[in-house]
Length: 84
Image (cartoon, rainbow, N blue to C red; front, side, top):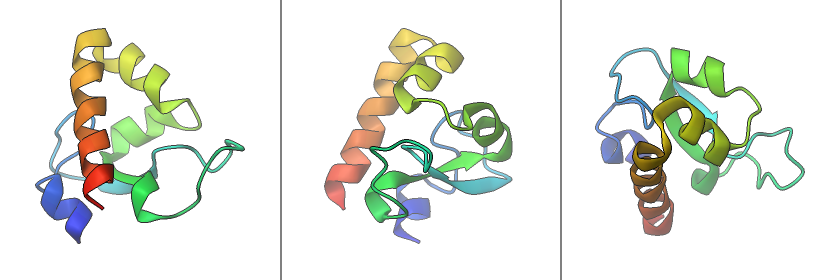
């Protein structure tokens, strides 16, 4: 619930407000994945989640949104995780 409140019921990637899914920021397939814990879950819309799949989140954000936008989005994600 706190996750959805922080993200205002929108996708942490594109800002879409429907079809949200819980995404593992660091994929479960990554050996460094901390698992299904609050500090690894962000809301992504179905479209963003499908395009991210098992990719490295930093690379995915940069490829999908461009370097500058990715920097801002990742900063907000870091802020969210630090609040937990």
